[in-house]
Structure formats: structure tokens, C-alpha cells
Image 1: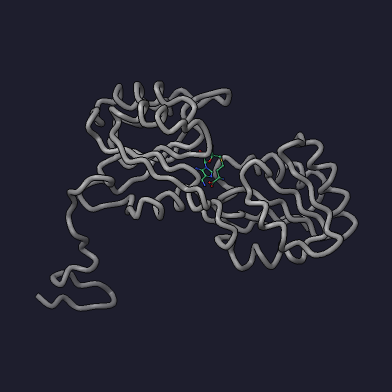
Image 2: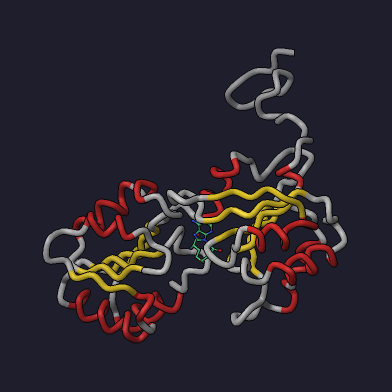
Length: 252
Ligand code: SAH
């Protein structure tokens, strides 16, 4: 059995209880060394074989996982954040299917959740935005034409950009071309959310590029954009005294 485990966004104690238990039971661990906190490897039992996938191809990863799983060993494939976002797990799962190897997925705290915690922010504020767009700037990995950043930016929703902190001038150009955000729209760069060296840089769309340059942010950061970072919103209906829910009657 292979288990894909979300390691969480950084801090070692943000892994799930289930993920930690599986790490402790694993005979083989293949971890994404570029972003997974190495402290998590201390959970491995003595004799566990540990591989850093940052130095491996898909084929090499499979050459470790498939024979081990076939031999009845417990294999953990440890991915950063939550494996479902930019994790390249689909190609591994399809290869395991083809090889007849069973697998499961254990979710993790994605860095976009870690970033909201670092910002002490709520992405979905009444009257501001009820939608979070998670995307990236096209780089070496292309983005489908219909999802070009400028067209997503036309919604003016909350937006979280992964894998784009090396391309901020282009990001800003696209955000403004959408027509909904302006140079004054609040933005923030969250560097290494939930790691000990986490840093939050609040700015605006207009000052994103100079902020990234000043603090030398080129990687391991998320760019967040939208009115959720501003000061204006409506209070929620859910906790409004005049609003009845399945759990509470309206009091006025
Ligand atoms: N599956 C991961 C994302 C992997 S893609 C998740 O759910 O978080 C790698 C990108 O994620 C990085 O380029 C960066 O944009 C972002 N990232 C990962 N960890 C981060 C962190 N702790 N703080 C800020 N951004 C992070």
C-alpha cells in the first residue's frame, strides 16, 4: 500500500494525526525535499528507507514505491501542503493503478490556508468576495488559455497565486488588465507561511513588485489579492441575531 500524505504548509506539527501515524509506521518514505519540513522525518521508525524526490524523476520515484508496495511494505509519499494542489500526484496514482498497487490519500493543510492564518484573514467576507481563485502565472508549466490570469482577474474575487513569486511584474500587469482590481487593491505576499522564518508583507497591487524586490522574494511565497485584506465588509448572516438557522431561532 502507498499512502500519499499531505505534510502541511511548513510547521512540522501541522501534519494531521493520521499522517503522522502513517509516517511512523512507514517502511519507505519518499518526501518532496524542496518544501517538506525535514523535522517530519524524525517520525520515521528505525530502518525506514527515506528518499528525497527533489532529486528524482517520476520513473525513479515509481521504481522505489512499486517494488516496496508489492513486497508488502508500507510506503508514504509525502507531499507539501495538500497533495491535491500542484502536487503531481495524478500521474503517480495512474502509474500505481497500471501497476496494480493500491493507494490512499491523506489530506494536508495547504499553504493557502497557512497564509490566511499568517495574515489573520478570512478569504470569504460577505459583500467583499465569496469566491477564492487559486491559480498561478503561466511559467514553464503552461496555463490553459481560458484561464489566463487577466480573465480570472476580471472577477475581482479573492485570489491566491501559487508558484508565481518569480514573475511578479507579469502578475501585476495581468491583474490590472482584468479591469476589476486597481493599483490600490490590497495585496500581500506571504513568505514561508507557518515556517519559523514566515514573513508577511502587506502592500497593494500597485506596490507588489517593489515589495517583492525589496524583500528579495522569489520563491516559497504566495501572492494574495483582494478586498478581503481591506477594512470594509458586512457582518455575517449566520451569527446575526435576526437570522434563524437550523440551530437557533431569530431573536429579533
Ligand atoms: N501542495 C502545496 C503546493 C505545492 S506548489 C500546497 O498545498 O501548499 C509549491 C508552491 O506552493 C510554492 O511555489 C509556493 O508558491 C507555495 N508554497 C508552498 N508552501 C508555502 C508556504 N509555506 N508559504 C508560502 N507559499 C508556499
